[in-house]
Picture 1 (cartoon, protein in one colour):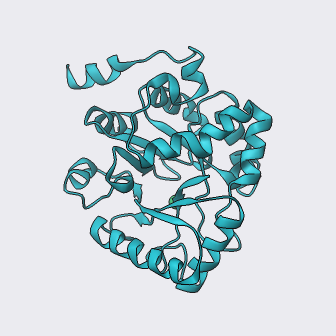
Picture 2 (picture 1 turned 30 degrees about the horizontal axis):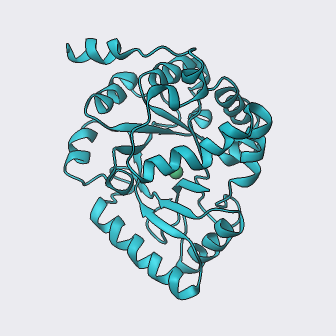
Length: 265
Ligand SMILES: [Fe+2]
């Protein structure tokens, strides 16, 4: 399996506090069947001022430490990027890294307040060739009241990333129900751990993958932990009907006119 969202780098955000914890987390990931992890520290202006080149250097350092420790886990770089004004320019300057320099960007909307111009901001990124992967919509307190925002964005090419722990109830009943709704309705594209530690929020996907198998079947579960994450790492484009079940089943019709209208193309 491939985990595209993990706070594995030590001492850079609210994830792993030390190299020792990062190594423990890496062992847990390997034991769970994870072969690749994208290291995605927060980028949140004023709180976590991380930047692409430094993240890449830290990933390289941690990869070396894992090799010394004999832990067979491949690392990749990225960031858990908070959605803020001016983000596009920061991506273009590579201050904000996409995943391994690909078209795929992990994008975190604010937790408690629907961002102003939310859909328009995401559409702008899509219009510039970026595929935003919206992190854990099931855990955003405003998402249930704005469910259509996320389905509209998925119809336009954004991906929805569900958190493994949320599907298992680790973030409460509301997040679990919404995670099951996104998966069950066929809008979720990918599963990730969003791990922050070796104990409370560990890097594991297998149990949540099993829950997805129960909800929508084994083929889709594999796409969420292998097929689509592998396409991310390979920087391969996936046609809209391949992003989620709802699109493949024809429930979602491409709505490029949203973007077209926004940019008058
Ligand atoms: Fe995260």
